[in-house]
Image 1: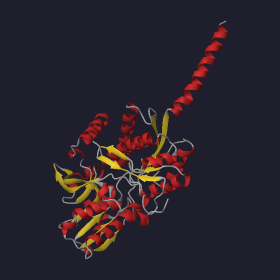
Image 2 (image 1 turned 30 degrees about the horizontal axis):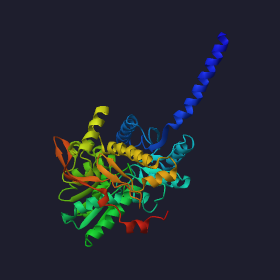
Image 3 (image 1 turned 90 degrees about the vertical axis):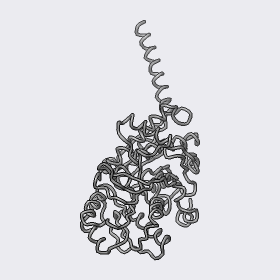
Image 4 (image 1 turned 30 degrees about the vertical axis):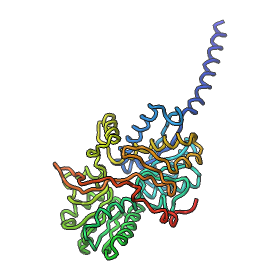
Length: 402
């Protein structure tokens, strides 16, 4: 009798286990995420905290697609194109994720975008800034969150158009992002002032800038203004060497990304005064949506948000809106849902443009100063990405037909 009861109980337990396992799988949506966590820790750690916070909030408030849990499978992409494509394939093939998001470097984003095209898998690029992701190498399966190099460079050029500078220097890292930023600056400068010219260009290898040699090359050309696209350690070295040699004195400097806390805070009292930058004055933005984000982030992590935190936090809410609209993880349904999708974020509403798959997320533009030994953005304003995106004519001329 005891043996019979045990057999019955065991059969019942097996049946319950068998029924629960597939139900659990069906009740979640698995998403693949990849990023250069080891190579770009200063940006990557806040970015991961941002998307983890958003995923927790989304799941706590009912999940996606009417009650499914959003599950993110995260991997380091190695910071190289070969590693990133391998990791992307592992996520899609071995982990069976519904789609991909993430990446940091522009060349890596392009490689994963091409993989998405070949495998017909949706990919939402997070940080990569090169225009090519949504323009010359754009494809049906790839979308992008951050404002691209054209958009942010245009913001800076317009902000600095009253400077009167006629001769310019360019300093940018010698890889896809830097080359894209430099090309856009030259194009936009020529449109703004046909009499202006670029008189010197410096393209140091990423992470290997010879700041002394770069500074001297620019000083020899004696430009009125400088367009800077370096970031992280390269930028810190350029700032230090440039200030020692008087490079920035009485010159207009337009600088991409420098106002982002990831790159501004480490400079401390060495922050160059007067630079016109794109950035994120997180502690000065007082909209209700942004204040709520900051409060939640600080409560969870006991730290202040960086631009990467904001970006990481916004992406899962775009994903939720897409899945809720699509009602499916079928790739074509998700793509159709993303095109023209409007989403509320801590920066306000953004739209994923149907014409080029570029989000209208904007950036803050302002000047740098030093207060109490710390760099700070002042006289800033929010530049809506919709006002600086490529025109439909430019998109049609550059972007391959789907």
